[in-house]
Image (cartoon, rainbow, N blue to C red; front, side, top):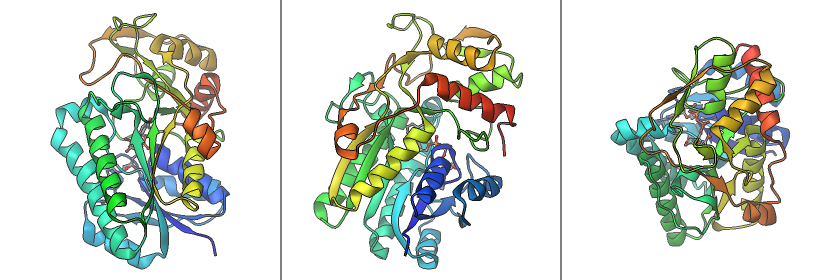
Length: 334
Ligand SMILES: NC(=O)c1ccc[n+]([C@@H]2O[C@H](COP(=O)([O-])OP(=O)(O)OC[C@H]3O[C@@H](n4cnc5c(N)ncnc54)[C@H](O)[C@@H]3O)[C@@H](O)[C@H]2O)c1
């Protein structure tokens, strides 16, 4: 019988691609989401790409009773946890909301998992736990510069404590760098409620005329061209990484931490140039202020994911931009 995997945040950007990837490998995903930053309208696309019915559970991860009901209704064997709040700048303005959802919500989730005897968890953590670190290895010091990064780190710490107390737990902590791009079919991509915070999605919206210009968040960083550098990794590669991690947990108890990035930093100006090549039109831009909590440069060390998970990102910035533009040309919304 194929495994029922609960994907929290499964209607969101990363989660939806994970659902499709898991379905392609014979799992039967169940989506759990409160649609705070997504929409249930994604379901028909998800089911078409997954090639199977995908149950949707509308539930807030902080609602422990509703989570219990979901574990009662479905024979869940593992959880991929992508639900959460992710904007660095918003986290600086609304710290309690970020601790409530990211920390409180994850506590509620692992409590219910424990009760249900489900001990396999892939957690979507973030490169923001490292702070300003280009070429960060998983055992590098964690010095998050933002509230968002600190909420992720708190969760990582308590997951390790949980596994130390009970050896049944099998936990993979995946530190995602900047997921970008879209499903190569052009049917699925990032569709946040309200304004986009990810650079590539913001570029797609400018190119499509939905917004008039891109605001650069500072151009005086200590980087070669003055704009911030990030490690952009295709969301389809990220989804493969989640599947590899879940498979790894089938044979390994305890906690393991992996970076999901390419190892290649790209500056904002380099991403703009790549997007202009993809869409064939110029992108208007203005320089705005630096966002609180932002860092100059971030990129992954990828050797552990490669050697233990056998995972490497295979798609480059050009394909990230081409796929994001295809999704945008198809509407960019559900
Ligand atoms: N996208 C990236 O580049 C990136 C990088 C590193 C880490 N991450 C982490 O991965 C996770 C997913 O990122 P994403 O880009 O898919 O974000 P997203 O906002 O597209 O998806 C998150 C999903 O969680 C849901 N959600 C939010 N609060 C919830 C709650 N209380 N209960 C149930 N569902 C809730 C949202 O509705 C959304 O569908 C985030 O936690 C983020 O911090 C993302």
